[in-house]
Amino acid sequence: MTPTTLRLALASLSLITLPCLSEPLLWGYSPSDPPPYVQLQGNELQPSLTRTIGEAVADATGREVHFIATPNNRIDESLAIGRIHIICNTLPDWLSAPEQLLWTQSLYEDADVVITRQAQPAPNSLDELQGAIVGTTLGYHYSPAITAAFDQQAMTRHDVRDLPTRLKMLERERLDAVIDLRRAVTHVLPENQSTFHISQWEVEHFSLRCAVANPTELDHQKLVQQIDEMINTGQIQEIVTRFD
Image 1 (cartoon, rainbow, N blue to C red):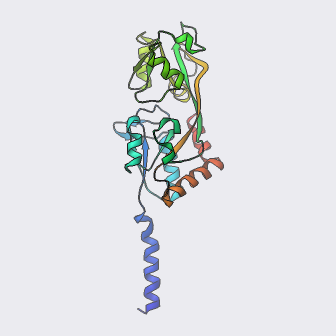
Image 2 (image 1 turned 30 degrees about the horizontal axis):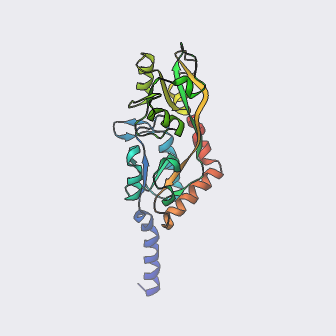
Image 3 (image 1 turned 120 degrees about the vertical axis):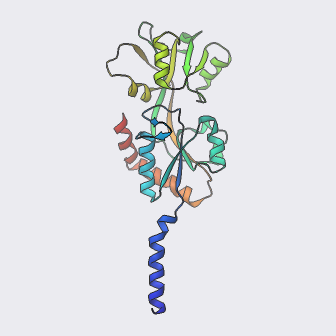
């Protein structure tokens, strides 16, 4: 084999093996996020909005993706120590050091709404929830007004493991109300159900984003650029529409 042929062979080999050497994308998700954001079977993430977006981003960047369950109270630590590279469905206000992270544009909109029994009038303000026992999500960041109401014991916060359980407790009058994401509530409840009110009043409206660790790493900067491009071209919205 001539030197030129050897160089060409080595160059071809490097092109073939390079994708295999790429570091897998460690995609965090909160196991307490309700469907359609997260759907679990045992400890495995099933087809869901989070998984579908993660796989689409991985395909676009030519990387393998591993989905890592990351409880809400461990997100900051997991990003800091490299246990995960990215987590979506979050906001800067929900993390302790958002300035140390990269942030994508908004992936999608959602809002916290109040669910009550049909026999009760739907609340239109916090004043109408005074004294209520409210079903909530462990580790979830509620609006400053809601958090203050819990801290001042104007309402009682009752963390419950998942949305279906919260709704069952509400139906059985073990809770007075539930606060949850509108997309999740409309996903889990039948369209013409007559058991619950879903408030038109929004406790808080937000534009959910992805947080990416290690802002100085070129691969992570490219990851944010790729997600933003997928947002701008409508690819992310097309995925979201499938789950609405």
